[in-house]
Image (tube, rainbow, N blue to C red; front, side, top):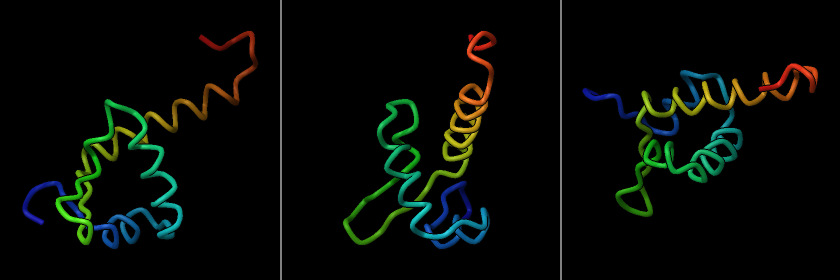
Length: 76
């Protein structure tokens, strides 16, 4: 697309993830107010993803995962 919006299929292909993984992550994404607008659903039939916001969510998930892996004494 001309803007940073993509379809679910495009996101799955570009990020090499399965649709079920996308849906699991999208559900999690929608639960965070700062990232919930990354998933755009103008109708029940069409879903678009704002890729820039989606990438922000993935960075957030990555940082949270990294924090969980740290020794409890090193967490901030």
